[in-house]
Length: 277
Length: 276
Image (cartoon, rainbow over all chains, first blue to last red; front, side, top):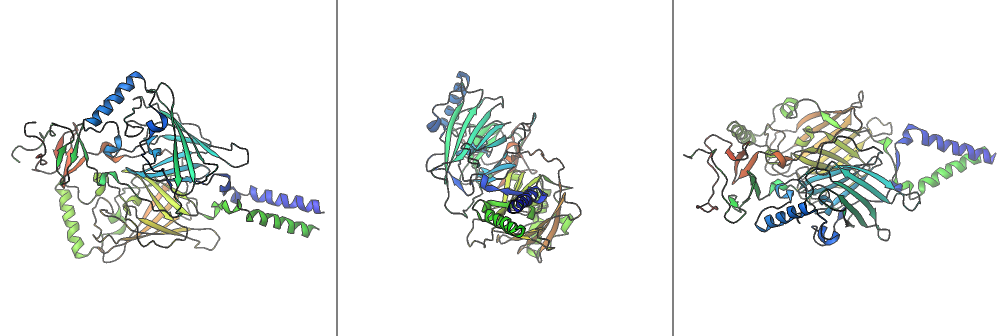
């Protein structure tokens, strides 16, 4: 009878799990605890070259980078679209210029970062394939897969691939270019430090036709110990001093007037204003 | 013996629930199904159409008339999004672009990519209002799930939003908020009981520019595609509005600066060398 009772109990639990109600029950214990506010460690977020070494650019794109660097030296924006409030996009947004929140649900992991403006990534973990035709965005279209590496029944790593990335983008302010074919792919492995669950790593590898081989860095992040942290909202256009007119960059001076960003820069063409004004 | 087995089963279930892992088990069946892509129907600039004329104080009625006159003259009026400033609350909930709602016990997140990506965090973890918060355009929101019919499932998310930053408006009509930045917005978000693919957001604004609270109910419909297309709007990418020394100008189709108003003076170029 005891055995029959146990069988009945097992059947009862199995029936519970099979109900539509239980289908909406999620065991978050299977996933690594990525809750909270993740901030980059002290130091410069423009860290691709320090962490990954010199970029393995093709000769063509080596010249493009040299021009970007020269433009910055002359007072230009180089290749850093956030100068004009264009989102940093991938992979630059994962440099964590500002803090990050990771929201894990079985179907999707969301990443929220307010840098330049609010920005977010949707990493689909619902088993979908890449679509054949997706609109290009700066954050790209990301598909993820949870991996239980040590076989303990819990996920350890979120593996992510991102495609459909829109240009212009940079890695950081260094001016490293992407090929202008919008074919970049980025792979990531996101996981907690096994010895310190308040440290997170994002191994980021870029595959791009401007590169002679994949280019990788590991971005580290630290969990803010405050369980109810302050979240800022960065609004680029609110106080942006950069003005782009006819592909030229100008500055807004402290008194609001237009001023050159480069030595001997010509003023903007005002032909559409009446001369008598 | 059968009775004892039942006790064993109950004990087993209790033990399971008492494990640390069970503490991380969430029954989403308790919450209304807000998943998917929510889109508006009709013109998003609908505050007056849905809520009637705004009950502004005489002072703010005059301010609003000034705003309307500015728009007629070619100015930007009171619509900060013209210059890529986020719409913020309550305008963002007019759903100019589709919305995703991510419900977790600790918070409900609202993601909308209009102007630029934007999101709201609605905290449902029982917290009290903080004393000192930096105002933002989306504000600081605390929510409370309500089981209105007592069936053990939540029906309504009640939300209050404070700490709202200026400048903001309700929509392109330019209805102003009081300059004291003390607006408070209350919402009730729920599914239509007869049609779970229709969502309502009852929005009520409390502001010192108003003689009484001002309310509308925003309707949204769930996209039937379970894997909808989400696009990402980037305001600065194609924005033709330029703001220089408190004056609004346009960028023409050929990229050159042009006036936004009749007989508008060009910007002051005193910082450029005359010989250039």
